[in-house]
Length: 99
Image 1 (cartoon, rainbow, N blue to C red):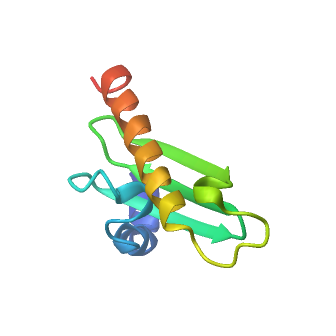
Image 2 (image 1 turned 60 degrees about the horizontal axis):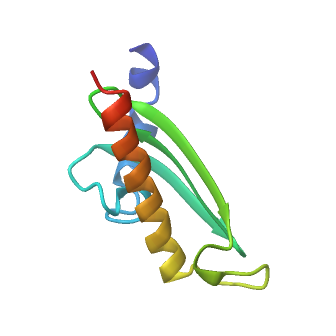
Image 3 (image 1 turned 90 degrees about the vertical axis):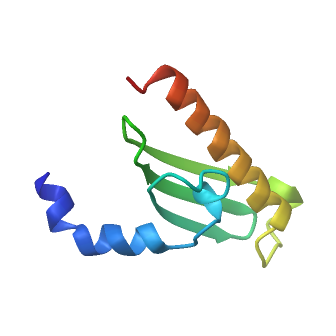
């Protein structure tokens, strides 16, 4: 794909970002390129997941792990919950979308 070549450096960098965290937490054997972020109670991740049938996903949350608008750090519980959500989404994709 032309876009894959054009953005190869960017895709490589986001592929290396946050190993074992966010979308990668419970999916260690997949190639995942992700761009996570957080601010106050919001914990978010956008990802390209290289399953048999690749997919894009964007998860935007608020309040995971008990965070509030006054929160100044990522909640470990919220980060774990986000990883669990990513796992469930990926399992749904495997059952329903992979050929």
